[in-house]
Length: 247
Image (cartoon, rainbow, N blue to C red; front, side):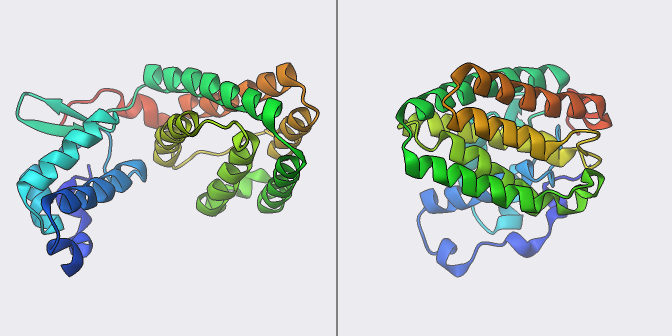
């Protein structure tokens, strides 16, 4: 299991960070640890040792504890035994719940964007779709080696669909849910789309949104999300890491 001690000295605070106040150092720790969790470098259930993290990052334990408390408020870390923190475990039920909530939030944002979006918004969607189409191999079994770059293009496409919703708060909630979902995908190193035609799925979503067909757009997005969740649930990572004890 990867823990906070195995990620190396590469994250030592820069002189600029070391010379700032505790709040800035805490933010630095929050961002580094958060990235390690979301990228799967810190595995579900791993202990987050404040002493070791402070040494690794070159900052105070107080700054690390503040960062860990903030991670806990985001659901990425958990306090346990009244004495420490661990990376939040993954589970089938959590992934299912996360998907349900994502669909609800995405649906609200898409519906609002369809109601408010103009011609420029439509053009941005078409442009994002063409970029995604070029990035998605025809034989999608070859997608896994491209997953990092592809994921960014994929998120830009889905982001274009909701860009006209007019609610920064809604978009902020949406972004947090996306990051939680990406954590599951990045933990699933064997993730692959299987027999899915991703280009066709995205094309259908794009066309429904541009046609201002709210029921069709929402149904297609829900089906798109649920297909991905089904693939992740069938993989080994969720069951293997479900609520395992911290060590």
